[in-house]
Length: 193
Image (cartoon, rainbow, N blue to C red; front, side, top):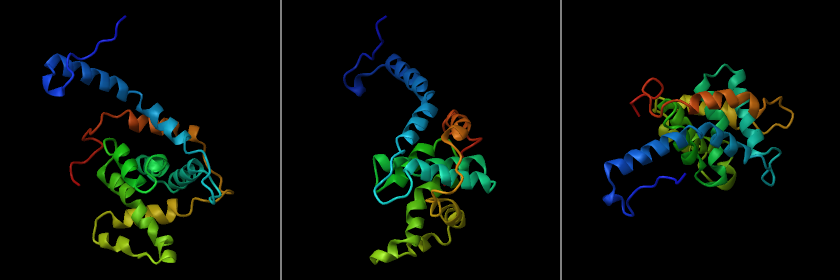
């Protein structure tokens, strides 16, 4: 069976049928997103020189801490995938991770993930002459405290090789549930930023 392709070589020459074909293709591709996310998390299972844990172990530990503290499913997922962008964008991984979850979780959770790098600076950047209080620019933001708490209670403390950490398999149902949602479904994603 020959694979269908669009009739154009320039997007401006595409027809309604071309774009219907592409829309169908993209919807089918998106159904595999949970597997793609789980595979991307698996690629974090290597230790960066100097760290006692792999990025995956760190992420699992943060998610375990979130789960153990009674956080809702979206925040547990955020703790699990907050560093998923490290492989491709080590200096702006927060933007990558926020972009991945944005269509599937409420805006508060996306904001926390996007800002967690700045908030994490509080714990170490002063050792290099940086401003550890740079996060204070968001002091009046409604989600400031939630991000501060995310970093303090789940992220910055999750480098403990002796902490009892849940497996990636234990989080798989959550990953499948959230990343199988209809993107931008108003039941899950609020319209306010």
